[in-house]
Length: 298
Image (cartoon, rainbow, N blue to C red; front, side):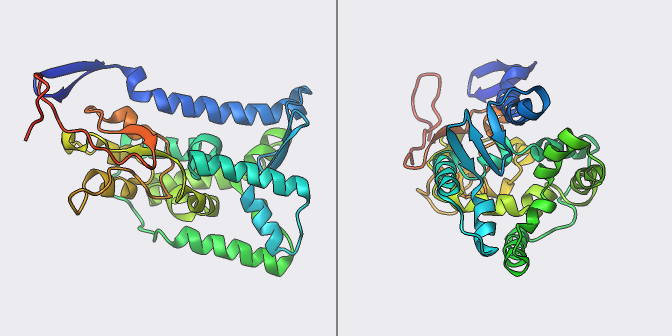
């Protein structure tokens, strides 16, 4: 149990649950989604039929991965009405919740990369390691679409580690283990958050609707920041925090507006000053630091 200073004359206790509650919710969501997809083939309980690429829930609700549909279009295949409907539903959800919510709340590979980040911190490996450009994943996204156009196939699905996990659970991992362990070792020893932060084209794609998403994290009490850097240490995309937390110009928004924010909410967990809050993109308020008497500090 940690006793944390939250301001002049104020202290509160923050236990393990408070430090990890959003992380726990994410793990339960990730494992729950994967479990629902596997219930059918493994137990004959067909709540969802299909995979994360394309599925139908309760034989009624179609859900289709927009990135898969985009590759299909480049490959020269015209999607049917069901696929288009499923795509619009998924895109609508991510425009509300944040595009890269997929990365932090749905993708099972996120568990692998989060464990790798934890190992990196535990082993005391500092720095970012091999510095890959932030545009690298967008180049890979472009290449995946070009390959689809040239081959007429959705080629990325052959390499997609999410698909590998799904197939591995059903049919045995085989060579998929090599790819997944490779991602883990790459993130631990070569590049901090290397796969999700620099290479994965799925994250690159979902950062696009993330630019206009409604749900946002705000550094609403940024005046209370004590520069502990805890939020930067746990954030998979730490570059998105600085413009909201340490603005270059007075009066700039405290909202984290980058499409690369994954809305993992770890910053809400670890901040001992409760600087961050969950809000919506039109909320530009900031809250000044107050004393025990409720007077604004200057």
